[in-house]
Image (tube, rainbow, N blue to C red; front, side, top):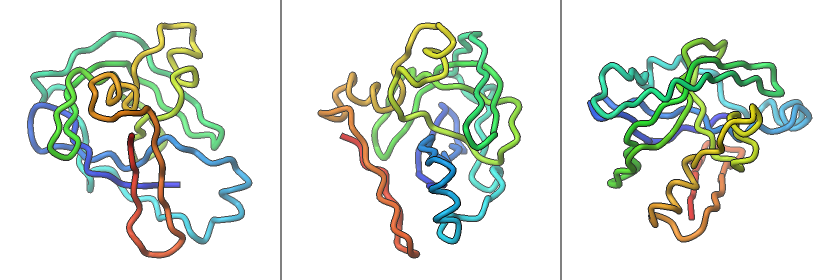
Length: 160
């Protein structure tokens, strides 16, 4: 299931937009709702993140290797950068930078920290996006909701 958002990452415009949240439904959901899913769209249309264009990116040199239940895979490394969400700047948000993938969109990890790839690899759990929003007092509770109607109505991702 794909959702798009105006989340900007990097210190330098043009800011890329995140295309897909990592809220992957189980395969039976995909089979039963295939007629309602969006077509895949090429990432360059939404902007691509380039750490070399950002003065605030920091490479943590921690390897990233993820494989999801749908068979998609990502590899690269973890880093931090500033994220702009609406009119709010969130400094030093940690994320995985995918340098090798078979998908055409990015993924924003918003699930439980214990399910994050670093925790599964025995590395230190980090503050993903919702946890960072809570820690920075941008939201009151570390919760989110995805509103995804099965028609052409706009989809929403609500935090806090």
